[in-house]
Amino acid sequence: MRKRNYPILLSLVLTLMVIVGGCSSDQGKTKGQENTDLKGSVIVDGSGTVYPLMANIAENYMTNLSSGVSVQVGRAGSSAGFKKFIPGEIDLADASRKIKDEEVSQLEEKGLKIKDDVMEIKLAYDGLTMVINKDNDWAQEMTKDEIVKLYLSGSYHSEDQVKWSDVRGDWPAEEIKFYGPNENHGTYEFFYETILGEKEMVKTAQLQQEYSTLVDLVAQDKNAIAFFGYGYYESNKDKLQAIEVDFGSGPIEPSLETIGEGLPYADFTRLVYTYLNLNYAKEKPQVLDFAKFIVSPDGAEKLAGLNGFAPLPSNVYEEYAKELDQLK
Image (cartoon, rainbow, N blue to C red):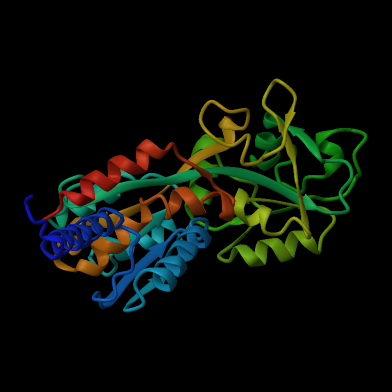
């Protein structure tokens, strides 16, 4: 009878278990695994609308994945962000509207081309939201045409001293106080270009740099109306109410269920973006790592809804991840 060599067999089994265990551990690693080797900073600036989402992404990245990297997120506004991005002062530029042709030309003057040197990343959907004071009990529903006419200069009076009763006769004969973000913001540009068709806005509109200021102004004035991204309304529902907009098939309340292409609030829906300097991503490992986290399942896709944005389909983020994986 052949003598069994149990010690040798046991040794081989244990060795195999270690190897298989090691392989399983490696296969379980994801782009979201903690990377303590990375150091340095990532600088992001731009859209105030995108700021809450990008700041939340940065917070999660630094807290859970890479404590050695400092991600600084600013909110100067979309246009102001591009003015920093084009000369190479920042790594990523957030924008609540697509980059403009003149900005693309300015990039090209610096030797940078979209796709080759700059990656456009669609982050999520946002819904332009019209907000009024909590005590306003008459303008809770308006048609899209009424909103557009309301904000167009000269629609009712040449001096633009518009009253609610000008819109509908049974509304109060009180002067409307118009508010909105200023020209630094992509939200202003979207409203002016897409909603108003590049026609002059009412002269009495008071445009502000800070969204928190807009929230306070509307919250304190029964006759105020303002516009900004859905996320700022969502986080200030205790102070404001949103106007339900009738696009032709009945009033629609902005929400994560109605905002998006092909959805009921589509006419007031827009994409929000971040733009990545690919040369910096190649030169600075921490920039590339953070960009990969933005498009990972734990990044914009997971955090969009928590910050008042509707996430894009998973395959959109997956395609960005593949492109970033191919960077050398």
